[in-house]
Image (cartoon, rainbow, N blue to C red; front, side):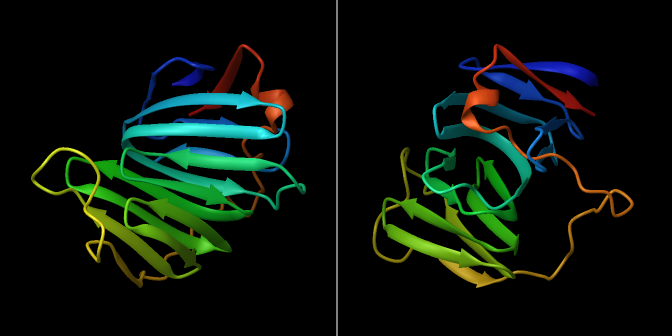
Length: 171
């Protein structure tokens, strides 16, 4: 619903289709119901995704600015791109549509580029996937993200803007 508040530091459930916008030309879109928590500070914007799927459109970041998406299986560091992160009972995946992201996980680190998808299946035991090859990088189907009629949408706010008490989505 339009106008849902996303409060910094609090677990929030975003409805399918909910959007978080910023004045810097980027957007976060909930592709399915998603549980998130946002923390931000000077030069840092972090989103924790515990369940769900989010598509991020992030413009090129200023030098020294950090934008991360954390799950219990991996941390995705953004450089300015369009990508999707999924976290479910089956595991973790990041699919990159434009640009590239760095993905750190228990087995190491992996750069994921446009057209690639990186997955970590959740093992039957609790906790992160074991090191040593359980993660898979594969070419992703080349689907283009929705362009909303070609109109550019705002991106996640820079740390100073994201640190305000509440952000809105415009679902």
